[in-house]
Image (cartoon, rainbow, N blue to C red; front, top):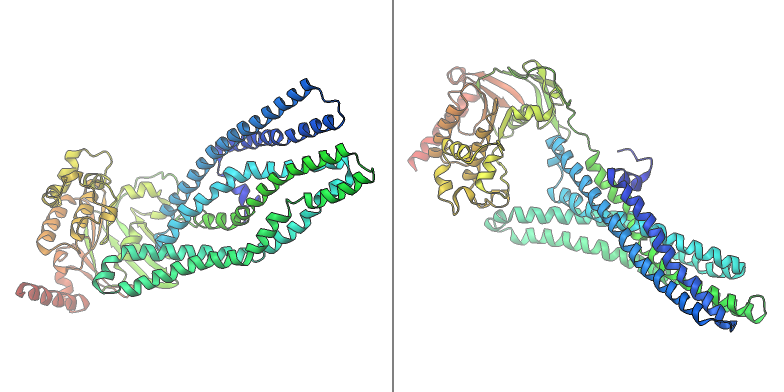
Length: 582
């Protein structure tokens, strides 16, 4: 990712779009609030001067007090308006950034997404983007004006007395030194907290998702120890960092605003020697009191400013990540045979497919079989355009699928995997995701055809039963059958079933197979099956082994060859007979 020429802050503002004007308005209102905040000190100084000169007029005194009150009220009012505008613009900007991050995940190759722990992605998209709120909503208006107020006050102090103006600045270099020491090693320390927080999120997600396995296999202690270690490291990363800089931070916060430590003794000596009038001395004292609040305000945001680059870089690593490049439109009709030509694919620098070439004719039923880890699912995912090929091409009707818009191609593909995800919605809405325009009766008809109507009606609220996170309230087989109904409702031209009946029992699998056979008439069907008997009637079987096509042909042809498929079939029949004996 290239560094934005305007830096992290410029990049954040570039995401605000039409709301950028609200940030500008927020700064203007904050400047007015700042002026309203420091102006009372000048009127207080005037009142003190008049009192010392013994020429105070009661009417002027009341007017000055009324002006001071109005200015303080104005400060609060304009501050509230400034904050309201900055927050409106900020939350809009955060929504834009978060939407871009989620949109990018959908456009990235699947491998790039699943290679990152879900907890780490969640930490970036939720917590990290949320943490930008302080930078935009508060620092932009308040930090800007927090610097302006001391400058105006110091300029006026220099006008009254250059020596006292310099005196008011004596504590600033000392405060800056303390601040610099506090910031020493900041990037390294903050980077550690980011890594520790990501690791904790990832371990927590893993622990929760794997709680069933943890309980069944008695790994509660070791899994908890892994979680506890991540939690301790997360806490230690912050505690160690604070321990390193706490003393310097305390001194910086105490010394820099302590302008009176130098103004009072120096000004007192000057007054005694007659180099400055008592009235001017008191005026400078009053003005330097006004320095304290904005200086503390500026320093309080220093930590957020220092973190901004790291946070924005982390977010931009997602938003600027390489994506599968697809055109926006296509000028020709899509359809026809699917052809893989010398397709190679690597995952984590390890080549999984080694020059796979195959043709799936339109309307044909083909099956991919082979040992576990041979590359069957990888081929299916490449055809579904979830990944891009490393080399070689995949075409449909002679058109490279990389030249087809993703949305257009996705309309023609229905993909059902072994571990299908259900959203925390009702059964009805999960099935309807296949076709958002489907009526309730069409949803129920699809469920009936896929053999899941009866078990759905047996649920607490039938089709209106909420399935829970990831479909956790349903069994694996029930989730798969709902996923198949969803795919069938989509009515796509190409249907890919990647061990989609792995969790179903043989009886229900037979029902699903018969239902699928009726539903896919005239469509292209690609099936990966762990039970060979369910695909023996395929028009053609491809035997995948170690990333290559070892054999291809019909069931009978492959049995006659006496190769890998014949061995797999024999093992399947023996296993099936064993199940029947049991």
